[in-house]
Image (cartoon, rainbow, N blue to C red; front, side):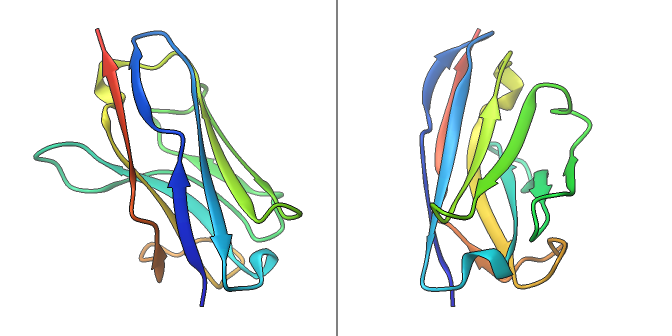
Length: 121
């Protein structure tokens, strides 16, 4: 059973960049599809990006496509979310998620505790 720990969140200004990391332990990392979700205050959690078990397939929410990039380093058991051109509407708690499938399921079994990203205007 995998445990996920996010890091890298913080307070930035609009237009800035940020890289989130999610370190996994307790499982065979390359057996998991991974992804990022976010939840803004007063809103439901929403999908942001996902990457397949093999790292060859990615998908993004329309709101972040072209600005966010998801990647994984199987040697470091870590998945990343590189974010550029950040907007105030990107403000949210960002969660890492995993499922023991080739492609991340819509309801992943494993979740991190979240990391706060705040973008000021």
